[in-house]
Length: 459
Image (cartoon, rainbow, N blue to C red):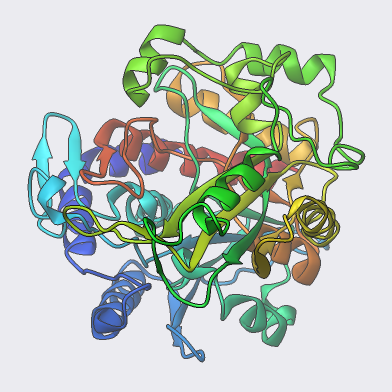
């Protein structure tokens, strides 16, 4: 291992340059005008994987291509089959708009102190490149890996991984593995490396209320017809009470309660109420009563209005009763909630509450089940040891409030649990202007990956 560690230390400057090259591609999967940029980024990554010694294929899909890169297969000295692990990442990124809020162009990497600023630096190019750097260190120093590795890096994660599930089914045999490793989550700080053992799921829908056949003069007709915008606000407001609890019959029936152990582990995560409020820019926090802010945002279900649209939005005034109003809503789910039954409960409640003065339309959106893996499993314990060796601090166990839908596909299609070993810091601004990646996290992530294969290989 010493040769691997020395190689990583000696090549940090080059690794950072390569990360800068990687983030220069505006590989925005949500915007059709960037299709060629996605192809170019995939080709760059394919060439990089081949250069470091991986057997690499650029695999077409109905959408953006998937890169599959394998370590040279070796025969086990014993009669048992060598362990095989899959490393997942994505080369597509979120849109960078609004550009005017960036302090430097989003696809022109800028280093300030120990941070690299660029769209995709943290989510997810820097994180999957850290794993590739670690494997390069093994291959270039002739150090034997105790397991076989396959990298699967896709280009549609930011738009729902539309092609990957089908790709996994088509290549199920060669991709079958003992576990999947993903670095696409975060850690509280450099002193608190983390294994994320649970993710919230999601259920999305769009609700539209329609009133008059057209926008009406509010002076002439206002007061004689219901206003769809007002009706929508009143309707949605009835879904949550003043204590932050969702008041939909049956909503909490399947929620797995937090154990005493879990609450104790979550309490270990660093948290400062004032600093958190200042970071978010809010005068006061709000959440479900009886739970800490950490528990509220990672381990409890939520119902959020993501957007409201109705009436005149331009400059100045236009006195109307709008013909319609629309809201986009997402529900975050926790074990053991599932999207379809929850959406059914929500639809039923909205139908009962909707006034007869408007017509309601509901369009279901994407959904993903929550995910949980036992932090006491052999593989999870191996990951915790690798984190401690790399970061030199005792790791924490945490839940993540967001969703990674492909994790459930790995379980259902490949039969493999996932180890979520994120490297992003809370202020890395993923999905926001001025995204960055901490270069110390980048370096320690490489060490973590190098140690991880040793620790998992022992199992």
